[in-house]
Amino acid sequence: MSSSAAPGAVLAAGIALLLAGCGGEEDTTTEADREQEQIEQVGNEWASLFAASGPTCELYVGQPMCEREICEHVGGETIENCTPPSPGFRASFEDATVEDVEIKGRQAAAKFSNGEAIKLREVLVSEVDGSPTCIGSGCPPSDHVQTGPYPAWRIVDYGGNAGREFFPVAGLRE
Image (cartoon, rainbow, N blue to C red; front, side, top):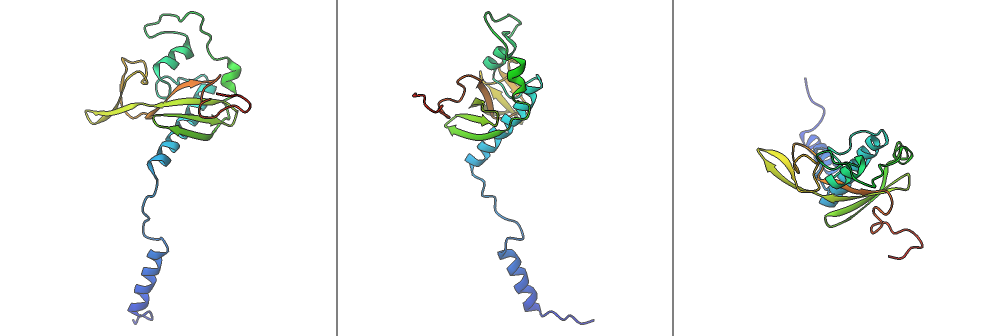
């Protein structure tokens, strides 16, 4: 059995494929791109749970916001003059998706398709026994330490003026 392709032609075809991008491309995603993608993911996942009145405290919301959401301090003490988010406000996030993200240092904001915004803060991540661990007040209310996979961005405000410094309202001056 004879081959009709010359060895040089096969080599040239292989080089052409590599130059065309086949054979594995270098990852050109920047740290800013990764942060933006993570914030979009956190926002979209939170919105879905929040709309369904699901548990958002464990993964997406820092302790102060968690307390505000359920109007209760850690330990069960009721927060006076606290009004939890209304069912209508929650429902507005049912099909909402993140449309815009702005990052300034360790703070960020995400604007949703329903016109609402959230403010986020990057939380400290360290390794404990080989698992990522969240340390500080941006973590869930479980002794301020959480071990396991979780987002490095936590929601610290939503509704009202959340994200205003990132997305100024037209006609208002800061």
